Amino acid sequence: MAAPGQDPLLPGGGPRAAAEWPRPARLSVGIIAAGRVGTAVGAALERAGHVVGACAAVSDASKERARTRLPESRIAAADAVAASSELVVLSVPDTELGSLAAGLAHTVPDWSGRIVLHTSGANGVAILEPLAARGAICLAVHPAMTFTGDPSDVDRLGSACFGITAPDEVSMAIAQSLVLEIGGEPVVVPEDSRTLYHAALAHGSNHLVTLVRDAATSLAAALRPQGSEEADAAAYGTITTEAGAPERILAPLLTAALDNALRHGDGALTGPVARGDVAAVAAHLRELDVVDADIAESYRGLALRTAQRSGATSALVDLLRPAGTGSAETTSERQEHHL
Image (tube, rainbow, N blue to C red):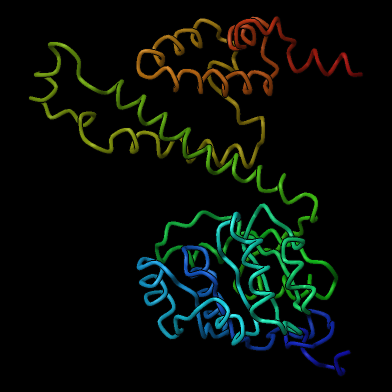
């Protein structure tokens, strides 16, 4: 048990109210491995006053990333990084996390008082059980942010939410403190909800990229000069023939749409699906199919979900529903049947 006033971020420390330790102990940090996420988290921790003493890097790209983003840290093997650190950050791919934890538990027998956190969104703390059994304080701390490898990644962490999972109150206080130190917002995610949490984030961020790229591809096809008009368009230097025109057109529209969706929920839905314009939606599907049948199919699926969320008429839902699945009820009709 910690002595009165002892900092819970010191190995072996005990609980204490966050308000009583506004500046927790500086920790020696080890990063395994030096990918985009690990180096960004390491740099953010250094900004908060911690010291990244070592990091594990295997590929030439990861070694260069470590030298650039964490120039004061030495590059070492994973077990050496762990053995020399009070806080060990595991930022390997999800598929490697379990085997890494088991391997480190074998190669570094004594984990008493060390803090170990992983940055995986899909996993809670159960995957770190081999290290917990050796005495480690285990945390799951996932930054809800995409990483590009640019210096701006570190700045974005300061405004990001972090999904945190911990096995007890002391561990939870440590996780929250670390996140608050780098400017983030800690959000508690129950252990058995990590997969659903991760699915929601992947659906929103990864699929948004696919949606935007499909929209840009379709818009580029719409702006491309056709037939005898091509020579005239080239002569006038039409801006729509320039590279990047689809992105410039989409940027303000999509930025506003995202902001409205986050602020107003389903009330932000506009356009032909929300209006129930069957003819317009059917025309969209025909034209998109000419450009790319897969884009047309993606449009159909998202339009169907939009129709369901907006309570569109059954005629529109039937147009969008895959053939052979039968007539569909609107959202409002389904709700009435459940009352």
